[in-house]
Amino acid sequence: MANGRVVHTADRMIGSRQLAALLPAEVVARPGYRSLADAVRTLILDGRVALHVRLPAERELAEAVGASRATVTAAYDLLRQSGYVRSRRGSGTWTELPDGHAPVGAHALVGAGGYSADGDTGIDLAIAAMGAPEDSLTDALARAAVRLPLLARSPGYHPFGLPDLRAAVADRFTRRGLPTRPEQILVTAGAQQAFALVVGLLCRPGDRVVTENPTYANALDALRHARLRTGSIAVSDTGWDLDIAESTLRQTVPRLAYVIPDFHNPTGSLMPPEQRRRLLDVTRATGTWLVVDETIADIALDVPPAAPLASRSGADHVLTIGSLSKTHWGGVRVGWVRATAKLITELTALRVSTDMTGSVLDQLVALHLLADLDRSLPLRLDQLRERRAALVASLERHTPEWSWRTQPGGLSLWVDLGEPVSSALAERAAAVGVHIGRGARFGVDPGTFEHRLRIPYTLPADRLDEGVRLLAQAFHDGVPLAPGVERPYWVA
Image (cartoon, rainbow, N blue to C red; front, top):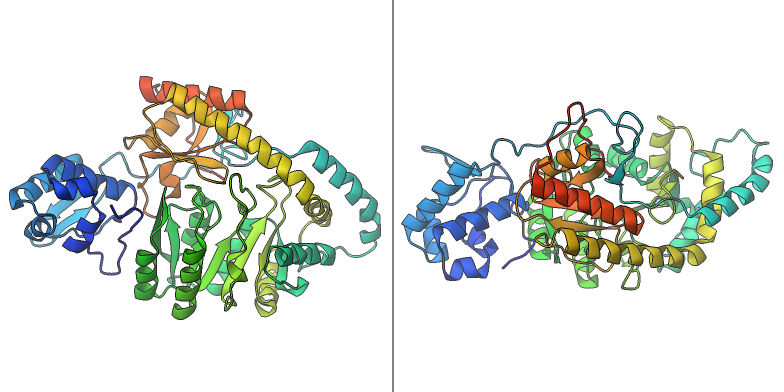
């Protein structure tokens, strides 16, 4: 099976051989109409065949998979009946989603992370981040308080970021294998602002961009808000298919590509060194800006952390963004962009037009947290390993019919429910106090990944177990949506 391949072409067609290559080997070996229909449905739900793509003619697909035309006709009929394709005389058969599987509309933010209006947080599985490490944060605040009076004598505007913090971030990149000068660093209010600034500087409405599929939901929102045309490269539990990625990049020649190679969000996959080299080479050849999100790069649970992708030669077209949100606390709104000094100057000019400067106090706290990272991070990773094991045990106990792959790092599991009920399950779970990131929030094509949930292992073990128990109850018993419960859509 060609795991992880995606079809999202400019002419919105997929050839018979191309589709046959995506099908599981057992379906091609013994094609039956039900197994063929199920396999195509899975490809659509998993984002490997995009929505609104024309499928091959029945005769062509029959020849490609070694089946009779009657088998393919019956499979297409079954897909039409279940709502996964539509056909019109003279225009062919096109992929779509059935009624009821369209994305849940964006609602107003409920609290800070999908919490209910009355302030009851319930069990929050929508945010893949831990609470602050109290000892480290308390110490950083105390040390920041000592320095703050000295800085308070100045006006307090540092558009590029505090010089000491820029130097500390640059030094950390250098120690990780990517020589960096302070003038190559812009300090931002988190990685999301960093990404929004990069998109705002490098792209214009209508430009074509490429992201992984699935990918970080808030990055997708930023691209949609900028009115960009989004293409995709599929990432599965087993990683990236760089053959298809290279083909997509060369055919579409996007302005920008956004990737999370280090413990990808939401799948947790880690991009191998050879694939990093190929991605760097093809984006350089196509003139594509490559934005690398390293927000989760330090959450290496079973393997050593990888060197920055931009550490390879010829990487001036790479912009690397990161933050302290996942290693420390999302409440410290400090992130950064690493790029050429010229780009950093241009990004800063754009930043000043909307934000002027960041919080001096937050940056002082971040400076001390970063200095303490080599001591505090191993403790966080040990805690995450324990919580990951607890989540796996809870899933095995309460939902043995679900499946997942335990990855070597990251903050969550990308769970396969076995049926496309993710959005409905998220609504039912909200009614019993569990807030969860439904799979469709992470898809480039709205409504895909309806058979997936992203479940973080960032809460204490007892909260994880209770959350999984309630999810299982909602899944098995069909708990009705309580009147007035808003549907949380925001995830981090």
